[in-house]
Image (cartoon, rainbow, N blue to C red):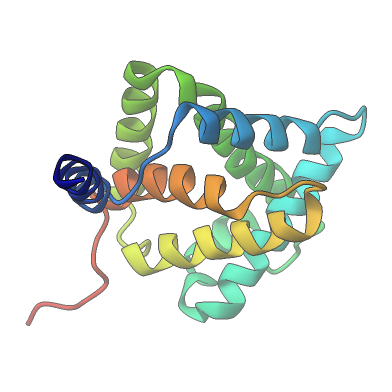
Length: 173
């Protein structure tokens, strides 16, 4: 019994350190649910709509993002420019989720995304945390067999890696 307790304590410590424990089963669930969402001939339109909704909800929660997003025509969410931006966001998520089973490629992809987003002064850790919550909330409404625990463990790990390079949002005087 003592061995089991020690083993569980070690597992909990590892999970706490890395802020996730995305098991092979969790990865399979996340990938399956994600791909089922877009397994339709209209998937690009659905991704654009989902991306628009997520970005508009993020800007609603963080109005300070509206100014930096003017370059992608946030004021006209049905515009082609904003549609392309929303699709790019969802395709980046699609790429990351597809790579869940390839740790080396996943690390490279999240590192690349982290570097790209860290170059944008207006984007903070708080924005990414809220974006992850928005995605999770919206997925819960969209997916037929949404498994919140699998998504939480896998998605939190992905987001933590990207957030590790972002600005805290606090000003230094």
